[in-house]
Length: 179
Image (cartoon, rainbow, N blue to C red; front, top):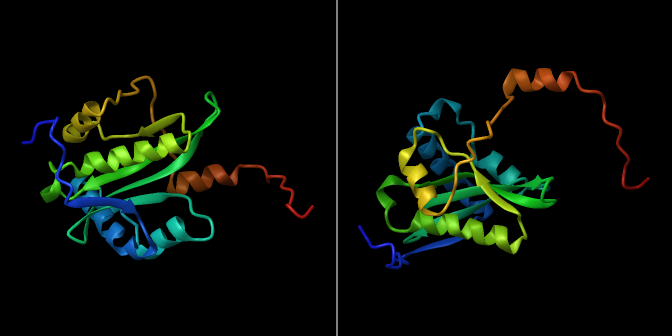
């Protein structure tokens, strides 16, 4: 194990994802789902990623960690907004490095690259969720200075419950840009 003062090997590089990376990202997402014991929930495809990351209205972004020309990890993130700070926040949806490439500083470089983007974009926060059983990830994030937000509980609507909630909404009044 390397000392925390020793710089990580730079045989890897971190770069912004391109449309041609979507198949690799989809594969990494499947590997992440296996690790998290959630493989039955994966619906990610290269086509859906291309549409949502690079389409006419991108809703998320990704960074790729490459080693010897192969994708070995990724970070997928998007912006949310803090009403109290009145600033954007960068939300890290997923960070994953293939197990055989861990311990080389790749995850740290993906994480700090996201933090740098948050600073460059004048974000007031950099946030993410971590499964409560994932001690290696919790330890990693703590080593980066993160603190758990124990006073907040994540909530979710999806699938039929999301559609049921949406069905009860009034129609939104919208004005077009043209008038």
